[in-house]
Length: 344
Ligand code: DOR
Ligand code: ZN
Image (spheres, rainbow, N blue to C red):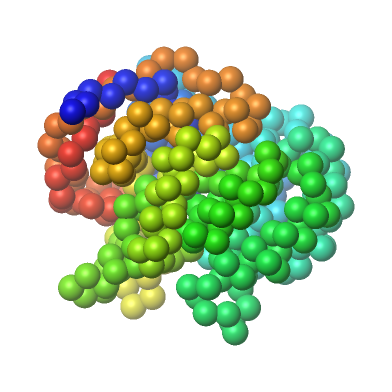
């Protein structure tokens, strides 16, 4: 049995850190485990200019504890009205990608895209400049059942988009269904997907186990076991089109434990431990390093990180709550004992 895992320092290819004191509370956890992270732009107001992304990057960098080597990779929030010439400025500022939120799909997505065709001039500029498109892949049509929104998105949006922009690099973010896993596996080298630890660990029963559990509510929502199995197969397949993206999305505990609960699971505190648990249970610990540390940089055209992290098989009890600005934040599995622990 493997009891110690040393991996090339990994990256988190999908992360929410918010802003202000809340951001300062969560950035250290990610910087401890990961060399880089793709920072989601869904602030209020959203990050829609190169200048705003550069200023946000500086605020995040200032929250990294001394001695840790962590680089935030910035994104812009795509809107119906984003001017195509912002793409040149974004590329010059080191922005790596734009995020497509269908309007109304999830947390802070009101300013999102109402019709993807409105963004075609921007997508053309992105394809030319080599910027990636990161997609929240759910339709918002109220006639479509919430649990079917990702699968319907593939036919209504993904396939036409891929046909119109064959060389645009598109990441299908936080996939949750067997349909999405199969689509990405067959879509060619320009298409990739991120997988969260929570979608690999849980099916939708987790939201209802013994009562409604708000900390397991995220979007896209957890699906049936058959879907989790398909995600697990993709993550452990060795295919370089699937890589780690936590979608760690902190919300104050009081806003999660409310009559209307915001979507998002906070996993950054123990992200690698949770992924190690997933790969260990699947008998695929030998596939974890490529998934966490190699496939993402290859797709993004970046060098792998130097340095390593080490995890040991050692019981470790997560705190029930941690400070989050002047609020509290409850990590997924808070108060429970995990099997793995990052040591260095
Ligand atoms: O669960 C989620 N939380 N899904 C998203 O798409 C957004 C995120 C957030 O920002 O809280
Ligand atoms: Zn997200």
